[in-house]
Image 1 (cartoon, each protein chain N blue to C red):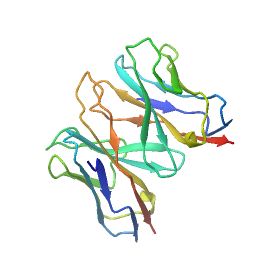
Image 2 (image 1 turned 90 degrees about the vertical axis):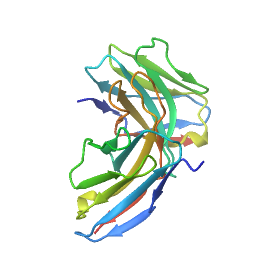
Image 3 (image 1 turned 60 degrees about the vertical axis):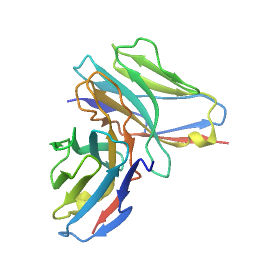
Image 4 (image 1 turned 30 degrees about the horizontal axis):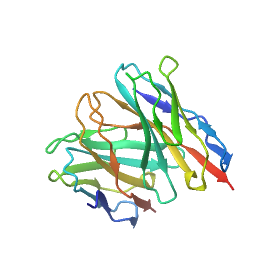
Length: 115
Length: 115
């Protein structure tokens, strides 16, 4: 079975600074997707960024980028120019290529942004 | 479009009572999912429905049943609620197809407390 591990229960960053959230995963599949979801206090799950395992290039979405190390099974999220609105719980998630869209989530990291 | 809607938003049950959580999506998605979110554990899949007329167990199915009423609706039933089922429940949907990525859309969640 696939597992996803986020080893940082909490992180903090100063506004305008950069922070990196860590995620590791374990799988025997060769075809899969990785995601970072944001959950603000409203509880709404928001997709931040995704990475296809077959792509070597790291995904980027505006201030959000990932460092995907396939051999090390590592998938970290970098938030640049942090904003107060980035404060939330962040979840790393895995989806196997033939899993009917089922997601396996990590435990989450609470990000605090200080003004 | 309303996206994914869930009812109720909050519910308090006594041990042994039963209830059904309702979920509906208006995006014509094939696949639907039920997750539960417990503190410190991220989201875990309870049941999923890859397409209308099919349902299958996820990681934590014990104590739950589901019904895919039609393409739009996917309900989760607790037959005899237990305090261990106190959690936040999320419904999600996607247009999953093998070999492709389709974003999974989440509902706002139902906070259930069993006393």
